[in-house]
Image (cartoon, rainbow, N blue to C red; front, side, top):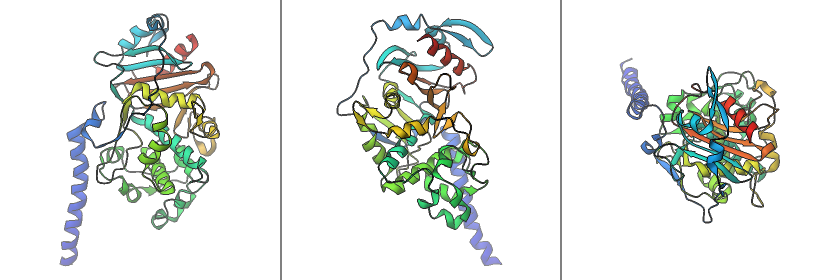
Length: 370
């Protein structure tokens, strides 16, 4: 009995220390914010050899002083767009139509050369990368079981074979993942495969979780036999004309797993280029980078397996009568694509948790006036 106790003590201590390490990181680094990336290791994506620049409309001030929007929650009084933006935690806001910047706004101490943070906007970048991998034949389809690429899960629970890749993309996998705190502050995402558990049958319930994106990333890496950052850079990022470096936060320099559920940092204009890529149905200046059919799959209204109508393949969908779709992140970060008027809108902010203003209403109002 004594020998078992002696063995258990160091095991328990290791578990406690690991838990304390996550808690210590949370206390030390605080809640995620727009400067958090500076406290973590980051993978650096270089700017393009031939950067692409959006031309500017001659009189941008006109748009900021002609478009009117309601002030926000419980206040429908209209104000000019620029006045409205100044009253919010918005750091940058751009309206791009026909590949031309109609209106650009930057908060005090920010300009077009400032780095912004995207948070969960990054999930849509993972979706695009998966589409490329399927288009290139590394993955057959989203109907494949995740265990084809993560066979070790069968040893944990044979029911994992029921989960298909599309269940991850639509957040209906049913997997019970570790807390968001663990996922965000962990220095080894490889441990996720052991820390998660099969909870509900896939399709039983929509449960938005960052773990679904991490598993999708692992699948891309297993299928392509490349680190996600290398494949993404080669197939997408280096092709869309980035004007500056982009930093994607990692779990640490030892394992170099990107935090693909968030934490992508770059110029607002470079994020807008990703929106432009989707606006042009995966085509960048004549080169089909993302399969056109993948764009269609990503933005269709489909409630299969109880997924909500407004979430598909790590994208969010606006009302059918508008037909816009968007990547969205914590604190109100957006890349909005509106094909009907050939528009891309980006918005990056400090904090507001989407509550202080009804951004959906403001977007409708802006789109109606373009």
